[in-house]
Image 1 (cartoon, rainbow, N blue to C red):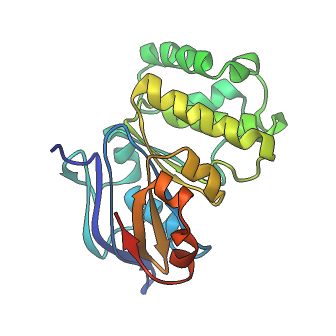
Image 2 (image 1 turned 120 degrees about the vertical axis):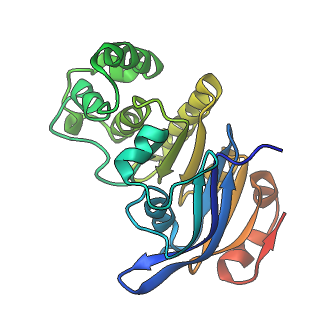
Length: 242
């Protein structure tokens, strides 16, 4: 059995002296799309901030591709192969598409940028049509694709995606998840996704973790949660795993 690409083991973390995450365990295997759900304030975004080095774990370990990375700076984690798409402030709205890609390509040398940019624009044809358009003038779905492309241009192996559906009209939500599925298949990318639209997340992920009050209270195949009734109990109380 191979080691997980991302392994969060017994992590305790928080802000100032207030703990938010309490002994969090989760892992993501290479090539998986894994969901992270839970009520508002459960600590989901704090998990991402801790994995990405914006917060240091007080206890426990974070390992990426077998290496301890709990004290690694965010810019160095990008170089190691982790991409991050925050829920907000994930683009430079006054810049055009190409300028946004350049901002995400600080780990990429000049000779490789053009090739990677053209490859991404082929992957996102809508962005190709708008490559010189200011991002703030684009639709919410198009802006979301700019954010994803900006994360992908550094050629990550793992992408942390916080709330893909946030701010999107319902008709665009599945389009975003379809694009994630295409990227996963064509590039063998791994995703860990936070999402409030639980049914859509469960339909588009392999496994899901449920976080409540800073603790993992359930995990298992997304299909099982989609078909069962236990998810409501997990949000309100109780724990289970598979």
